[in-house]
Length: 394
Image (cartoon, rainbow, N blue to C red; front, side, top):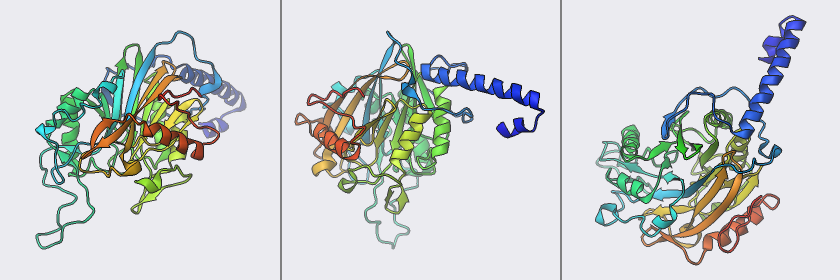
Protein backbone atom coordinates (compact mmCIF):
# COMPACT_ATOMS: atom_id res chain seq x y z
CA UNK A 1 0.00 0.00 0.00
CA UNK A 2 2.86 2.37 0.81
CA UNK A 3 4.57 1.69 -2.53
CA UNK A 4 1.37 2.54 -4.41
CA UNK A 5 1.17 5.92 -2.69
CA UNK A 6 4.72 6.73 -3.64
CA UNK A 7 3.79 6.63 -7.31
CA UNK A 8 0.96 9.20 -6.97
CA UNK A 9 1.27 13.01 -7.31
CA UNK A 10 2.49 14.72 -4.15
CA UNK A 11 -0.83 16.28 -3.09
CA UNK A 12 -2.77 13.09 -3.56
CA UNK A 13 0.00 11.13 -1.86
CA UNK A 14 -0.06 13.43 1.16
CA UNK A 15 -3.85 13.14 1.44
CA UNK A 16 -3.71 9.36 1.21
CA UNK A 17 -0.93 9.22 3.79
CA UNK A 18 -2.95 11.31 6.30
CA UNK A 19 -6.02 9.14 5.68
CA UNK A 20 -3.97 6.01 6.26
CA UNK A 21 -2.64 7.34 9.58
CA UNK A 22 -6.16 8.15 10.77
CA UNK A 23 -7.56 4.78 9.75
CA UNK A 24 -4.64 2.94 11.37
CA UNK A 25 -5.09 4.87 14.63
CA UNK A 26 -8.81 4.07 14.71
CA UNK A 27 -8.11 0.41 13.97
CA UNK A 28 -5.50 0.15 16.73
CA UNK A 29 -7.80 1.82 19.28
CA UNK A 30 -10.64 -0.45 18.17
CA UNK A 31 -8.59 -3.55 18.90
CA UNK A 32 -7.39 -2.30 22.23
CA UNK A 33 -10.89 -1.59 23.47
CA UNK A 34 -12.26 -4.83 21.99
CA UNK A 35 -15.44 -3.17 20.79
CA UNK A 36 -18.02 -5.01 18.75
CA UNK A 37 -16.94 -6.15 15.32
CA UNK A 38 -18.18 -4.35 12.25
CA UNK A 39 -18.25 -7.71 10.53
CA UNK A 40 -21.52 -9.61 10.31
CA UNK A 41 -21.73 -11.32 13.74
CA UNK A 42 -21.09 -15.02 13.93
CA UNK A 43 -23.49 -17.14 15.88
CA UNK A 44 -22.01 -18.81 18.95
CA UNK A 45 -20.01 -21.90 18.12
CA UNK A 46 -19.59 -21.11 14.44
CA UNK A 47 -16.34 -22.12 12.77
CA UNK A 48 -14.93 -19.47 10.52
CA UNK A 49 -12.42 -19.65 7.70
CA UNK A 50 -11.79 -16.33 6.08
CA UNK A 51 -9.08 -14.22 4.50
CA UNK A 52 -6.31 -13.13 6.86
CA UNK A 53 -6.56 -9.60 8.16
CA UNK A 54 -4.24 -7.15 6.45
CA UNK A 55 -4.06 -4.41 9.08
CA UNK A 56 -1.11 -4.69 11.49
CA UNK A 57 -1.38 -5.02 15.27
CA UNK A 58 0.85 -3.02 17.61
CA UNK A 59 0.60 -5.49 20.51
CA UNK A 60 0.29 -2.74 23.13
CA UNK A 61 -2.30 -4.41 25.36
CA UNK A 62 -1.18 -2.37 28.36
CA UNK A 63 -1.26 1.04 26.72
CA UNK A 64 -4.66 1.77 28.28
CA UNK A 65 -5.92 0.81 31.76
CA UNK A 66 -8.87 -1.62 31.85
CA UNK A 67 -12.24 0.09 31.64
CA UNK A 68 -14.23 -0.21 34.89
CA UNK A 69 -17.25 -2.46 35.39
CA UNK A 70 -16.68 -4.62 32.33
CA UNK A 71 -18.39 -7.97 31.75
CA UNK A 72 -16.08 -10.92 32.33
CA UNK A 73 -15.72 -14.43 30.97
CA UNK A 74 -14.14 -17.41 32.72
CA UNK A 75 -11.97 -19.69 30.58
CA UNK A 76 -11.11 -23.16 31.88
CA UNK A 77 -8.29 -24.87 30.00
CA UNK A 78 -6.56 -28.23 30.19
CA UNK A 79 -3.71 -29.89 28.32
CA UNK A 80 -3.47 -33.21 26.52
CA UNK A 81 -6.52 -35.50 26.53
CA UNK A 82 -6.10 -39.15 25.49
CA UNK A 83 -9.15 -41.28 26.33
CA UNK A 84 -7.54 -44.57 25.30
CA UNK A 85 -7.17 -46.52 22.09
CA UNK A 86 -8.40 -49.66 20.46
CA UNK A 87 -4.75 -50.74 20.15
CA UNK A 88 -3.64 -50.25 23.76
CA UNK A 89 -6.91 -50.51 25.64
CA UNK A 90 -10.15 -48.71 26.35
CA UNK A 91 -11.60 -47.68 29.72
CA UNK A 92 -14.35 -49.80 31.29
CA UNK A 93 -18.07 -49.11 30.96
CA UNK A 94 -17.59 -47.85 27.42
CA UNK A 95 -15.87 -44.77 28.82
CA UNK A 96 -18.72 -43.72 31.12
CA UNK A 97 -17.43 -41.81 34.15
CA UNK A 98 -14.04 -41.13 32.55
CA UNK A 99 -13.94 -37.53 33.79
CA UNK A 100 -15.85 -38.03 37.06
CA UNK A 101 -12.97 -37.16 39.40
CA UNK A 102 -12.29 -33.81 37.74
CA UNK A 103 -15.72 -32.87 36.42
CA UNK A 104 -16.49 -30.53 39.31
CA UNK A 105 -13.57 -28.30 38.27
CA UNK A 106 -14.53 -28.10 34.60
CA UNK A 107 -16.95 -25.32 35.37
CA UNK A 108 -15.93 -22.23 33.41
CA UNK A 109 -18.06 -20.20 31.02
CA UNK A 110 -15.97 -21.78 28.26
CA UNK A 111 -14.10 -25.05 28.84
CA UNK A 112 -11.40 -26.04 26.36
CA UNK A 113 -8.57 -28.53 25.91
CA UNK A 114 -6.41 -30.45 23.46
CA UNK A 115 -8.05 -33.66 22.23
CA UNK A 116 -5.37 -36.11 21.11
CA UNK A 117 -6.88 -38.95 19.12
CA UNK A 118 -9.89 -39.77 17.00
CA UNK A 119 -13.57 -40.52 17.51
CA UNK A 120 -14.19 -42.98 14.72
CA UNK A 121 -14.77 -46.52 13.67
CA UNK A 122 -12.04 -48.19 11.61
CA UNK A 123 -11.28 -46.18 8.49
CA UNK A 124 -9.00 -48.53 6.58
CA UNK A 125 -6.03 -46.32 7.49
CA UNK A 126 -3.83 -46.85 10.55
CA UNK A 127 -0.48 -45.14 10.82
CA UNK A 128 0.86 -47.97 12.99
CA UNK A 129 -0.31 -50.82 10.76
CA UNK A 130 2.26 -53.18 9.29
CA UNK A 131 3.38 -52.27 5.79
CA UNK A 132 2.42 -55.77 4.66
CA UNK A 133 1.50 -59.09 6.23
CA UNK A 134 5.12 -60.21 6.48
CA UNK A 135 6.44 -56.99 8.00
CA UNK A 136 7.25 -56.56 11.66
CA UNK A 137 4.86 -54.39 13.69
CA UNK A 138 5.99 -50.80 13.99
CA UNK A 139 7.69 -50.20 17.32
CA UNK A 140 7.11 -47.11 19.47
CA UNK A 141 4.13 -46.16 17.38
CA UNK A 142 1.04 -44.70 19.00
CA UNK A 143 -2.31 -44.35 17.27
CA UNK A 144 -5.34 -43.33 19.29
CA UNK A 145 -8.87 -44.28 18.31
CA UNK A 146 -11.89 -44.50 20.58
CA UNK A 147 -15.53 -45.27 19.70
CA UNK A 148 -17.59 -42.35 18.36
CA UNK A 149 -19.88 -42.65 21.40
CA UNK A 150 -17.07 -41.21 23.57
CA UNK A 151 -17.92 -37.78 22.17
CA UNK A 152 -20.88 -37.70 24.55
CA UNK A 153 -18.55 -38.24 27.52
CA UNK A 154 -16.54 -35.21 26.39
CA UNK A 155 -19.69 -33.09 26.22
CA UNK A 156 -20.99 -34.39 29.55
CA UNK A 157 -17.71 -33.42 31.21
CA UNK A 158 -18.38 -29.82 30.23
CA UNK A 159 -16.07 -29.21 27.28
CA UNK A 160 -17.17 -26.54 24.82
CA UNK A 161 -14.26 -26.26 22.37
CA UNK A 162 -11.43 -28.71 21.66
CA UNK A 163 -8.28 -28.10 19.67
CA UNK A 164 -7.53 -30.80 17.09
CA UNK A 165 -4.18 -29.29 16.09
CA UNK A 166 -1.89 -32.03 17.37
CA UNK A 167 -0.01 -35.13 16.27
CA UNK A 168 -2.79 -37.70 16.81
CA UNK A 169 -5.95 -36.40 15.17
CA UNK A 170 -4.72 -37.76 11.83
CA UNK A 171 -3.77 -41.22 13.15
CA UNK A 172 -6.56 -42.76 11.09
CA UNK A 173 -6.29 -40.57 8.05
CA UNK A 174 -8.42 -37.77 6.75
CA UNK A 175 -11.60 -39.79 7.22
CA UNK A 176 -10.79 -40.36 10.87
CA UNK A 177 -10.21 -36.65 11.36
CA UNK A 178 -13.45 -35.70 9.60
CA UNK A 179 -15.38 -38.28 11.63
CA UNK A 180 -13.95 -36.81 14.82
CA UNK A 181 -15.08 -33.34 13.81
CA UNK A 182 -18.53 -34.66 12.97
CA UNK A 183 -18.94 -36.53 16.26
CA UNK A 184 -17.89 -33.54 18.34
CA UNK A 185 -20.31 -31.23 16.53
CA UNK A 186 -23.11 -33.77 16.96
CA UNK A 187 -22.91 -33.37 20.75
CA UNK A 188 -22.49 -29.59 20.72
CA UNK A 189 -18.70 -29.44 21.12
CA UNK A 190 -16.84 -27.17 18.71
CA UNK A 191 -13.39 -27.92 17.33
CA UNK A 192 -10.60 -25.62 16.22
CA UNK A 193 -7.12 -25.85 14.74
CA UNK A 194 -7.73 -26.61 11.08
CA UNK A 195 -6.00 -24.45 8.42
CA UNK A 196 -7.30 -20.85 8.47
CA UNK A 197 -10.10 -21.91 10.81
CA UNK A 198 -11.22 -20.77 14.23
CA UNK A 199 -14.42 -20.79 16.23
CA UNK A 200 -16.28 -17.89 17.83
CA UNK A 201 -18.74 -18.41 20.66
CA UNK A 202 -21.01 -15.90 22.31
CA UNK A 203 -20.61 -16.30 26.08
CA UNK A 204 -23.00 -13.97 27.86
CA UNK A 205 -21.98 -10.46 26.88
CA UNK A 206 -18.55 -11.53 25.61
CA UNK A 207 -17.57 -13.01 22.26
CA UNK A 208 -14.69 -15.48 22.53
CA UNK A 209 -12.59 -16.71 19.61
CA UNK A 210 -10.61 -19.94 20.05
CA UNK A 211 -7.79 -20.89 17.69
CA UNK A 212 -5.53 -23.94 17.59
CA UNK A 213 -2.01 -24.32 16.16
CA UNK A 214 0.26 -27.35 15.78
CA UNK A 215 3.31 -28.51 13.83
CA UNK A 216 1.64 -30.57 11.09
CA UNK A 217 0.32 -29.92 7.64
CA UNK A 218 -3.31 -30.86 8.30
CA UNK A 219 -3.65 -28.08 10.88
CA UNK A 220 -2.90 -24.40 11.28
CA UNK A 221 0.88 -24.52 11.68
CA UNK A 222 2.63 -23.23 14.75
CA UNK A 223 5.83 -22.91 12.70
CA UNK A 224 4.31 -20.36 10.30
CA UNK A 225 4.30 -17.40 12.64
CA UNK A 226 3.42 -14.69 10.14
CA UNK A 227 0.34 -16.63 9.02
CA UNK A 228 -0.58 -17.27 12.65
CA UNK A 229 -0.44 -13.55 13.39
CA UNK A 230 -2.72 -12.74 10.48
CA UNK A 231 -5.27 -15.33 11.55
CA UNK A 232 -5.26 -14.07 15.14
CA UNK A 233 -5.67 -10.51 13.88
CA UNK A 234 -8.68 -11.63 11.85
CA UNK A 235 -10.21 -13.39 14.86
CA UNK A 236 -9.63 -10.30 17.00
CA UNK A 237 -11.86 -8.27 14.69
CA UNK A 238 -14.75 -10.65 15.38
CA UNK A 239 -14.36 -11.35 19.10
CA UNK A 240 -13.73 -9.50 22.34
CA UNK A 241 -11.44 -12.17 23.79
CA UNK A 242 -9.02 -14.38 21.82
CA UNK A 243 -7.73 -17.71 23.18
CA UNK A 244 -4.91 -19.56 21.40
CA UNK A 245 -4.05 -23.24 21.77
CA UNK A 246 -0.40 -24.07 21.04
CA UNK A 247 0.75 -27.66 20.44
CA UNK A 248 4.50 -27.26 20.42
CA UNK A 249 7.80 -28.34 21.95
CA UNK A 250 9.56 -31.62 22.67
CA UNK A 251 7.97 -34.32 24.82
CA UNK A 252 8.82 -35.74 28.21
CA UNK A 253 10.84 -34.79 31.27
CA UNK A 254 13.86 -33.71 29.23
CA UNK A 255 11.71 -30.90 27.80
CA UNK A 256 10.26 -29.36 30.96
CA UNK A 257 12.18 -26.13 30.49
CA UNK A 258 11.22 -23.65 27.80
CA UNK A 259 14.10 -22.91 25.46
CA UNK A 260 14.57 -20.03 23.09
CA UNK A 261 14.60 -20.93 19.42
CA UNK A 262 13.10 -23.86 17.57
CA UNK A 263 12.56 -27.16 19.35
CA UNK A 264 13.17 -30.33 17.37
CA UNK A 265 11.84 -33.69 18.50
CA UNK A 266 11.91 -37.01 16.65
CA UNK A 267 13.26 -35.18 13.64
CA UNK A 268 10.34 -32.74 13.59
CA UNK A 269 10.34 -28.99 13.98
CA UNK A 270 8.00 -28.53 16.94
CA UNK A 271 8.10 -24.75 16.80
CA UNK A 272 9.69 -21.79 18.56
CA UNK A 273 7.31 -21.53 21.49
CA UNK A 274 8.46 -18.15 22.79
CA UNK A 275 8.52 -16.45 19.40
CA UNK A 276 5.12 -17.91 18.50
CA UNK A 277 3.46 -17.02 21.80
CA UNK A 278 4.76 -13.46 21.83
CA UNK A 279 3.76 -12.99 18.20
CA UNK A 280 0.15 -14.09 18.70
CA UNK A 281 -0.18 -11.87 21.76
CA UNK A 282 1.16 -8.99 19.68
CA UNK A 283 -1.54 -9.86 17.14
CA UNK A 284 -4.36 -9.76 19.70
CA UNK A 285 -4.38 -13.03 21.67
CA UNK A 286 -5.41 -12.61 25.32
CA UNK A 287 -4.51 -16.10 26.60
CA UNK A 288 -2.16 -18.80 25.28
CA UNK A 289 -2.67 -22.42 26.38
CA UNK A 290 0.26 -24.72 25.61
CA UNK A 291 0.30 -28.50 25.43
CA UNK A 292 2.13 -31.34 23.71
CA UNK A 293 5.19 -31.83 25.95
CA UNK A 294 3.08 -34.01 28.32
CA UNK A 295 4.76 -32.29 31.28
CA UNK A 296 4.12 -28.98 33.02
CA UNK A 297 6.11 -26.01 31.80
CA UNK A 298 6.50 -22.51 33.16
CA UNK A 299 4.09 -19.61 32.78
CA UNK A 300 4.93 -16.01 31.98
CA UNK A 301 3.29 -12.64 31.52
CA UNK A 302 3.84 -10.93 28.20
CA UNK A 303 2.33 -7.53 27.57
CA UNK A 304 -0.23 -8.18 30.31
CA UNK A 305 -1.34 -11.51 28.83
CA UNK A 306 -0.74 -14.95 30.38
CA UNK A 307 1.14 -17.64 28.48
CA UNK A 308 1.03 -21.18 29.90
CA UNK A 309 3.66 -23.06 27.93
CA UNK A 310 2.32 -26.52 28.78
CA UNK A 311 -0.42 -27.77 31.10
CA UNK A 312 0.83 -31.36 31.01
CA UNK A 313 -1.19 -34.50 30.45
CA UNK A 314 -4.77 -34.15 31.62
CA UNK A 315 -5.71 -37.69 30.58
CA UNK A 316 -3.59 -40.45 29.07
CA UNK A 317 -5.40 -43.75 29.40
CA UNK A 318 -2.85 -46.53 28.82
CA UNK A 319 -0.99 -44.09 26.64
CA UNK A 320 1.18 -41.80 28.78
CA UNK A 321 3.84 -42.44 31.37
CA UNK A 322 2.73 -41.56 34.90
CA UNK A 323 6.24 -41.50 36.36
CA UNK A 324 7.39 -38.31 38.04
CA UNK A 325 6.71 -35.13 36.08
CA UNK A 326 4.97 -37.12 33.33
CA UNK A 327 2.01 -37.68 35.62
CA UNK A 328 1.54 -34.05 36.64
CA UNK A 329 -1.09 -31.82 35.00
CA UNK A 330 -3.34 -28.90 35.76
CA UNK A 331 -6.68 -27.27 35.12
CA UNK A 332 -6.18 -23.56 34.53
CA UNK A 333 -9.05 -21.19 35.28
CA UNK A 334 -8.69 -17.66 33.97
CA UNK A 335 -11.24 -14.86 34.19
CA UNK A 336 -10.77 -12.12 31.60
CA UNK A 337 -12.53 -8.82 31.16
CA UNK A 338 -14.30 -8.03 27.93
CA UNK A 339 -11.26 -6.08 26.71
CA UNK A 340 -9.12 -9.20 27.22
CA UNK A 341 -7.31 -7.96 30.32
CA UNK A 342 -6.68 -10.29 33.25
CA UNK A 343 -9.12 -10.27 36.13
CA UNK A 344 -8.21 -13.39 38.14
CA UNK A 345 -6.83 -16.89 37.75
CA UNK A 346 -6.31 -20.21 39.45
CA UNK A 347 -4.34 -23.40 38.88
CA UNK A 348 -6.07 -26.61 39.99
CA UNK A 349 -3.45 -29.41 40.18
CA UNK A 350 -4.26 -32.77 38.60
CA UNK A 351 -2.49 -36.07 38.13
CA UNK A 352 -2.77 -39.21 36.05
CA UNK A 353 -4.35 -41.95 38.16
CA UNK A 354 -3.70 -45.53 37.08
CA UNK A 355 -3.89 -46.38 34.26
CA UNK A 356 -4.02 -42.77 33.03
CA UNK A 357 -7.35 -41.37 34.23
CA UNK A 358 -7.63 -37.66 35.06
CA UNK A 359 -7.74 -37.03 38.80
CA UNK A 360 -7.38 -34.11 41.19
CA UNK A 361 -4.07 -33.92 43.02
CA UNK A 362 -4.46 -32.83 46.67
CA UNK A 363 -0.66 -32.60 47.00
CA UNK A 364 -0.61 -29.76 44.48
CA UNK A 365 2.53 -30.82 42.63
CA UNK A 366 1.67 -28.76 39.56
CA UNK A 367 1.86 -25.51 41.55
CA UNK A 368 5.33 -26.28 42.86
CA UNK A 369 6.50 -27.36 39.41
CA UNK A 370 5.20 -24.28 37.61
CA UNK A 371 6.66 -21.86 40.14
CA UNK A 372 10.06 -23.55 39.94
CA UNK A 373 10.06 -23.66 36.13
CA UNK A 374 8.71 -20.14 35.72
CA UNK A 375 11.36 -18.66 38.00
CA UNK A 376 14.11 -20.50 36.13
CA UNK A 377 12.91 -19.80 32.59
CA UNK A 378 11.27 -16.36 32.97
CA UNK A 379 12.93 -14.60 35.89
CA UNK A 380 11.74 -11.17 34.74
CA UNK A 381 8.23 -12.10 33.60
CA UNK A 382 7.25 -15.19 35.59
CA UNK A 383 3.70 -15.87 36.67
CA UNK A 384 3.57 -16.56 40.41
CA UNK A 385 1.08 -19.07 41.80
CA UNK A 386 0.13 -19.01 45.47
CA UNK A 387 -0.02 -22.17 47.57
CA UNK A 388 -3.78 -22.37 47.11
CA UNK A 389 -3.49 -22.00 43.34
CA UNK A 390 -4.30 -18.31 42.83
CA UNK A 391 -2.35 -16.69 40.00
CA UNK A 392 -0.99 -13.27 40.91
CA UNK A 393 -1.86 -10.45 38.52
CA UNK A 394 1.00 -9.11 36.37
